[in-house]
Image 1 (cartoon, helix red, strand yellow):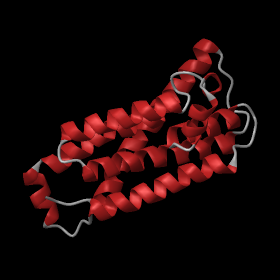
Image 2 (image 1 turned 180 degrees about the vertical axis):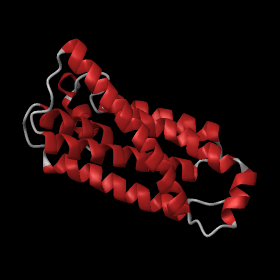
Image 3 (image 1 turned 90 degrees about the vertical axis):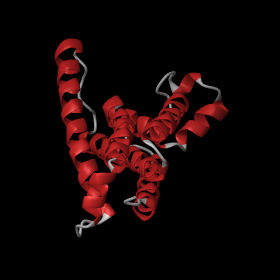
Length: 183
Protein backbone atom coordinates (compact mmCIF):
# COMPACT_ATOMS: atom_id res chain seq x y z
CA UNK A 1 0.00 0.00 0.00
CA UNK A 2 2.79 2.37 0.86
CA UNK A 3 4.44 1.91 -2.54
CA UNK A 4 1.11 2.60 -4.22
CA UNK A 5 0.74 5.96 -2.56
CA UNK A 6 4.34 6.99 -1.97
CA UNK A 7 5.39 6.62 -5.59
CA UNK A 8 2.96 9.27 -6.90
CA UNK A 9 4.26 11.75 -4.34
CA UNK A 10 7.75 11.18 -5.71
CA UNK A 11 6.28 11.35 -9.21
CA UNK A 12 5.38 14.99 -8.63
CA UNK A 13 9.04 15.92 -8.37
CA UNK A 14 9.86 13.89 -11.49
CA UNK A 15 7.13 15.53 -13.53
CA UNK A 16 8.14 18.97 -12.29
CA UNK A 17 11.73 18.24 -13.24
CA UNK A 18 10.59 17.29 -16.75
CA UNK A 19 8.48 20.44 -16.92
CA UNK A 20 11.27 22.51 -15.37
CA UNK A 21 13.74 21.75 -18.14
CA UNK A 22 12.78 24.57 -20.50
CA UNK A 23 14.94 23.26 -23.35
CA UNK A 24 13.28 19.85 -23.17
CA UNK A 25 9.83 21.41 -23.01
CA UNK A 26 10.46 23.70 -25.96
CA UNK A 27 11.59 20.73 -28.04
CA UNK A 28 8.66 18.59 -26.95
CA UNK A 29 6.18 21.38 -27.66
CA UNK A 30 7.29 21.34 -31.31
CA UNK A 31 6.37 17.68 -31.66
CA UNK A 32 2.82 16.43 -32.09
CA UNK A 33 2.95 14.93 -28.57
CA UNK A 34 0.01 16.18 -26.54
CA UNK A 35 0.34 16.90 -22.82
CA UNK A 36 -2.01 13.98 -22.12
CA UNK A 37 0.28 11.52 -23.92
CA UNK A 38 3.38 12.87 -22.18
CA UNK A 39 1.74 12.68 -18.74
CA UNK A 40 0.42 9.20 -19.47
CA UNK A 41 3.84 7.94 -20.55
CA UNK A 42 5.49 9.38 -17.44
CA UNK A 43 2.87 7.81 -15.19
CA UNK A 44 3.04 4.45 -17.02
CA UNK A 45 6.77 4.13 -16.37
CA UNK A 46 6.32 5.09 -12.73
CA UNK A 47 3.40 2.66 -12.30
CA UNK A 48 5.58 -0.19 -13.57
CA UNK A 49 8.24 0.77 -11.04
CA UNK A 50 5.65 0.86 -8.25
CA UNK A 51 4.22 -2.52 -9.24
CA UNK A 52 7.70 -4.04 -9.24
CA UNK A 53 8.29 -2.59 -5.76
CA UNK A 54 4.95 -3.88 -4.50
CA UNK A 55 5.64 -7.35 -5.89
CA UNK A 56 9.07 -7.52 -4.26
CA UNK A 57 7.71 -6.22 -0.93
CA UNK A 58 4.86 -8.74 -0.91
CA UNK A 59 7.25 -11.60 -1.74
CA UNK A 60 9.58 -10.60 1.09
CA UNK A 61 6.72 -10.12 3.56
CA UNK A 62 5.32 -13.52 2.64
CA UNK A 63 8.69 -15.25 2.91
CA UNK A 64 9.97 -13.51 6.05
CA UNK A 65 6.82 -12.68 8.01
CA UNK A 66 4.44 -15.34 6.62
CA UNK A 67 1.91 -12.67 5.60
CA UNK A 68 -1.05 -14.38 3.99
CA UNK A 69 -2.17 -13.39 0.49
CA UNK A 70 -5.39 -11.42 -0.05
CA UNK A 71 -8.62 -13.22 0.71
CA UNK A 72 -10.24 -11.67 -2.37
CA UNK A 73 -7.60 -11.28 -5.08
CA UNK A 74 -9.89 -9.56 -7.57
CA UNK A 75 -11.08 -6.92 -5.13
CA UNK A 76 -7.58 -6.44 -3.74
CA UNK A 77 -6.12 -5.83 -7.20
CA UNK A 78 -8.98 -3.54 -8.20
CA UNK A 79 -8.65 -1.57 -4.96
CA UNK A 80 -4.90 -1.23 -5.41
CA UNK A 81 -5.23 -0.11 -9.04
CA UNK A 82 -7.91 2.45 -8.14
CA UNK A 83 -5.84 3.74 -5.21
CA UNK A 84 -2.79 4.11 -7.43
CA UNK A 85 -4.84 5.86 -10.12
CA UNK A 86 -6.27 8.33 -7.62
CA UNK A 87 -2.92 9.12 -6.02
CA UNK A 88 -1.14 9.41 -9.37
CA UNK A 89 -3.85 11.73 -10.64
CA UNK A 90 -3.34 13.97 -7.62
CA UNK A 91 0.42 13.93 -8.20
CA UNK A 92 0.04 14.81 -11.88
CA UNK A 93 -2.41 17.58 -11.02
CA UNK A 94 0.08 19.03 -8.54
CA UNK A 95 2.80 18.86 -11.19
CA UNK A 96 0.56 20.72 -13.63
CA UNK A 97 -0.31 23.43 -11.10
CA UNK A 98 2.87 24.03 -9.12
CA UNK A 99 5.21 26.79 -10.24
CA UNK A 100 8.36 24.88 -9.28
CA UNK A 101 9.70 21.48 -8.28
CA UNK A 102 10.15 22.70 -4.71
CA UNK A 103 6.57 23.94 -4.48
CA UNK A 104 5.19 20.72 -5.97
CA UNK A 105 7.19 18.61 -3.54
CA UNK A 106 6.20 20.71 -0.53
CA UNK A 107 2.49 20.71 -1.38
CA UNK A 108 2.65 17.02 -2.28
CA UNK A 109 4.24 16.15 1.06
CA UNK A 110 1.66 18.13 3.03
CA UNK A 111 -1.24 16.53 1.11
CA UNK A 112 0.25 13.05 1.29
CA UNK A 113 1.05 13.20 5.01
CA UNK A 114 -2.32 14.78 5.81
CA UNK A 115 -4.21 12.10 3.89
CA UNK A 116 -2.03 9.40 5.44
CA UNK A 117 -2.66 10.67 8.98
CA UNK A 118 -6.43 10.98 8.46
CA UNK A 119 -6.73 7.81 6.39
CA UNK A 120 -5.32 5.33 8.86
CA UNK A 121 -1.73 5.24 7.63
CA UNK A 122 -0.18 6.49 10.87
CA UNK A 123 -2.73 5.34 13.43
CA UNK A 124 -5.44 2.81 12.59
CA UNK A 125 -8.64 4.63 11.67
CA UNK A 126 -10.45 2.82 14.48
CA UNK A 127 -8.23 4.64 17.00
CA UNK A 128 -9.02 8.10 15.59
CA UNK A 129 -11.94 10.19 16.84
CA UNK A 130 -15.01 9.26 14.81
CA UNK A 131 -15.22 12.63 13.05
CA UNK A 132 -11.56 12.36 11.93
CA UNK A 133 -12.02 8.77 10.80
CA UNK A 134 -15.08 9.82 8.78
CA UNK A 135 -13.12 12.67 7.19
CA UNK A 136 -10.31 10.26 6.33
CA UNK A 137 -12.67 7.90 4.51
CA UNK A 138 -13.64 10.55 1.96
CA UNK A 139 -9.98 11.14 1.07
CA UNK A 140 -8.32 8.84 -1.47
CA UNK A 141 -5.72 7.48 0.95
CA UNK A 142 -8.34 6.54 3.54
CA UNK A 143 -10.70 5.07 0.95
CA UNK A 144 -7.79 3.09 -0.50
CA UNK A 145 -6.69 1.77 2.89
CA UNK A 146 -10.25 0.71 3.71
CA UNK A 147 -10.83 -0.94 0.33
CA UNK A 148 -7.52 -2.82 0.31
CA UNK A 149 -7.81 -3.91 3.95
CA UNK A 150 -11.35 -5.18 3.45
CA UNK A 151 -10.45 -7.18 0.34
CA UNK A 152 -7.25 -8.47 1.97
CA UNK A 153 -9.29 -9.95 4.80
CA UNK A 154 -11.73 -11.61 2.39
CA UNK A 155 -14.50 -9.04 2.26
CA UNK A 156 -15.97 -6.88 -0.48
CA UNK A 157 -14.93 -3.21 -0.34
CA UNK A 158 -17.68 -0.67 0.20
CA UNK A 159 -18.94 0.91 -3.00
CA UNK A 160 -18.43 4.34 -1.44
CA UNK A 161 -14.68 3.76 -1.05
CA UNK A 162 -14.34 2.59 -4.64
CA UNK A 163 -16.34 5.58 -5.89
CA UNK A 164 -14.10 7.98 -3.93
CA UNK A 165 -11.08 6.48 -5.67
CA UNK A 166 -12.66 6.52 -9.14
CA UNK A 167 -13.97 10.06 -8.68
CA UNK A 168 -10.60 11.36 -7.49
CA UNK A 169 -8.77 9.68 -10.37
CA UNK A 170 -11.16 11.05 -12.99
CA UNK A 171 -11.49 14.60 -11.70
CA UNK A 172 -7.77 15.08 -10.97
CA UNK A 173 -6.70 13.48 -14.29
CA UNK A 174 -9.00 15.64 -16.40
CA UNK A 175 -7.95 18.76 -14.50
CA UNK A 176 -4.25 17.90 -14.88
CA UNK A 177 -4.52 17.42 -18.64
CA UNK A 178 -6.45 20.68 -19.04
CA UNK A 179 -4.12 22.69 -16.81
CA UNK A 180 -0.77 21.33 -18.02
CA UNK A 181 1.29 23.85 -19.98
CA UNK A 182 4.50 23.36 -21.92
CA UNK A 183 5.98 26.62 -20.65
